[in-house]
Length: 78
Image (cartoon, rainbow, N blue to C red; front, top):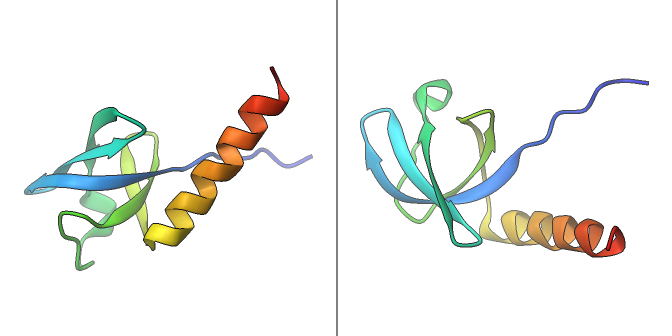
């Protein structure tokens, strides 16, 4: 069995250098953008976050679908 990594989609609400404040489901986190150097990122964009780093830009639809899947998994465990 291969280990899995989990990346969570979040929306960028502000950017200051290599640090972005991101939000998802009412939770805000400061996220490191260092691994996304050269990417065109702006407030309102969605990114996948893994261990505090933004690792990939995703569409709003991809982010929404991911959160729907997470919510479904959480509800099935209840």
